[in-house]
Image 1 (cartoon, helix red, strand yellow):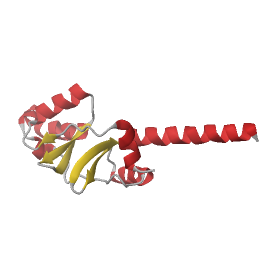
Image 2 (cartoon, rainbow, N blue to C red):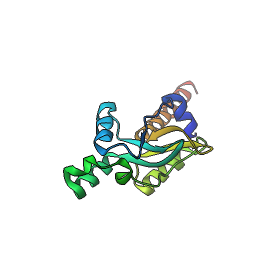
Image 3 (tube, rainbow, N blue to C red):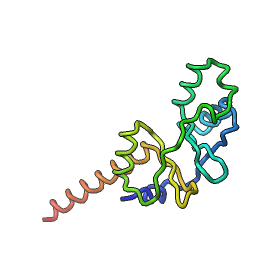
Length: 142
């Protein structure tokens, strides 16, 4: 299965920021939306990711004054992205190897979705449970 399958079930509405937003504005957005990260955009292009981890690093290095700085100085860049055709297991492997929890999904250089490791793990668990149920049904009717 591919990332397209996950986008089909979760939708592809994506909350974004630009690099000139303040870190404080970004923190407020993360809290209000109860999300862990947002893609940072320049026009249609993803230039980075701003996550909870970036907040921690910003405050640890600059103190509370870091909250007044721009997201562009605190974000993780460049963003690691995938396409809708990426296999779910491939995306999980990429996230594990790179120690990241969010992936922007791009098509022809444009953002079309955003997936988290939680989205991918949920999908895998649901698939494994469905396969196990199908196997139990097959065994019972054999």
